[in-house]
Image (cartoon, rainbow, N blue to C red; front, side):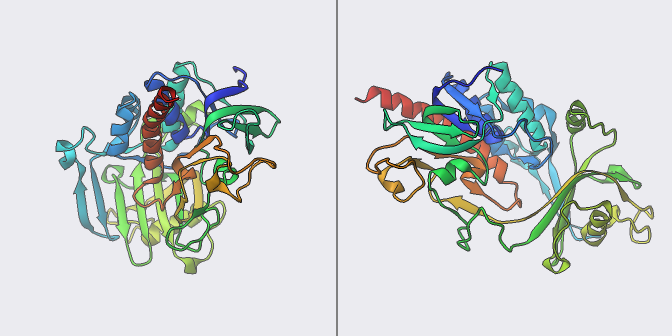
Length: 388
């Protein structure tokens, strides 16, 4: 791996979808003087965010990154929503073909999206430096417009622009003194709030007629439930990482009523099956007397599962200067005057805003942040160069 330089113009902190897309956006505009770092040894191998919207694919198309992602995903052109036993509404996304070249919701796990973007970046000869955990931001002693970024191993890199793409618990945001709160409740976004709790999992079913299972969603006063097939390309990615799954993998998700108590840290097969049987469509029920096919459907295997409480938060600002007048009282290096200009700090993706998973906005908005930021940065650098 190439060694990390002591200085760069742009430092991208975080190599998730937002950070990778920022680097690719800069490359698309012919700009290469940037460095990408990430705190962990390797990227996540779990599916997490699952849907890429048309607007996001259109943004990726502008930097020549859309086709590879579309090729590995599944195009969901209709979504069926109902109660447990009957369909109430069906959306036909193909009717959007007059407005977009992507009239569908693309089903593709976030890990696969990251892998594709990472491989694209690698093809340009760009290295993501790992593990590089940021612990401090300081104003450079020799140039007020630069920021010294200090890593856990003691290494320091100096940059003019620092882009925080390091997630909901962003160190860049915290070190820059930017608040992060729920716009409705005022709760700090870094803290779990007492809102609805959810469980999502990637599983394999057994039994029943799988030809009847597309994108299924049910709604009820107590909860909601969804089930959708994941693309076979996800099986291929898992196999590359030593986890071979031959069967069709499905993503399921459900809201868990608070009266049920806290969701287990590692939801068991029995726990998830109970949610399917309580809130899922009857075609997925393990009770043959309820299932319209008279054949029980059960969860055969759990590939991955997680729990979380839904909450939203937004950064007070997405742009600032480290140590500038607007940051009085922020955590900056001792002895730095707050009247100096300071290096430029920018936030994108979950570092700037987090959302309820309903509607799948989180990763989508982060990628669009990144694509548009690349263009905006180039314009800012060009304007700065032309002005004395």
